[in-house]
Each structure stands twice: as C-alpha cells, then as structure tokens.
Amino acid sequence: MEKVMSEEDFIISKTDTKGKLTYVNKIFMEMAGYAEEELLGKPHSIVRHPDMPKTVFKLLWERITHKDEIFAYVVNKSKNGDYYWVYANVTASVDPRGNTLGYYSVRRRPNPSALAIIKPLYTKMVDAEKRGGMDASKKLLDEVLYEKGVSYDEFIIDIQK
Image (cartoon, rainbow, N blue to C red):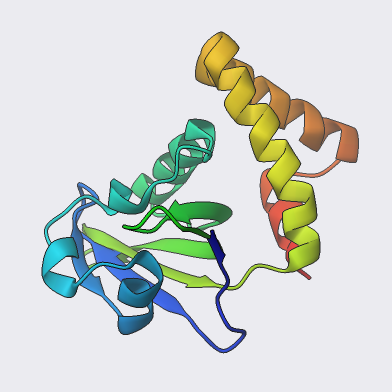
C-alpha cells in the first residue's frame, strides 16, 4: 500500500561515506516503519524499493562523491512492504578542509504531477535494466532528456514545480 507524506513533513537522514545511517529523524522512522535502533549503522539501502532504477542511484553516488548535490525522485519500501515516494536532495557533508564526512539527505513530498511523469519512466528504466543492464537504462534516460532538450537537473527540478 502506498503511504503519502504530508506537505509539511521532511524526512532527514545522514550517512557515513559508505552509506550507513548515522542519523534519522522521526518522520523517516514513521514512513519506513523502523525503530531508530533498527536503522542506525545499517545501509541506507534498507529502504530501497525494487522498482527503483539502479541507474538513478549510480548517478546519485557519482554526484555526491564529487561533492555535487543532486535532486531525485525515489520510491522507498517500508519495513512492512508499503512504499512511499519522496523528492530527495542529497549533499555531501564536509569538514573545514573540504574532506567528506558523510552525506545529508532531505526529502519532501513530491508533486503528484511529477510522479505522473516519473513512475512510467522508472518502470521503463527498470525493465531496460532487466533486459540490458544499467547501460540500457541510462541510454533510455538520456534519450528522454535529449528529446526534451534538458539536462537531468533541469528535468527533475522543472517537473517538481
């Protein structure tokens, strides 16, 4: 069953450089259906939904490891099998010398009109990954962006408006 965030909610989490959770807020725990002790020290992928294209996570990791922020639509899986969509912003947390300490993510409710575009795209991307791997999925995403004449960032941000 789908769970929907309220307009005023924000899911916040922090991870170490390997993606293990070091902080989760109350709304994260409520949406994911886990207690804090079940989450801390675990990989953030504990909430990964199988309908989420791996290509998007590859892009996310490429960006944040280079200290570039990224916005993305993500479908997550709750402990009980429910799912929920988020509009995520992920950034690197750095020390005064610029060394990456970990990653910080803030998620909010995605615009329903954006999900009407993202859901079928992600379904096609996951199908492409099953048939031809992440290269096929990335090619499909690149074709969509090319047809629209926009970058990934422009596309993701524009449909959230």
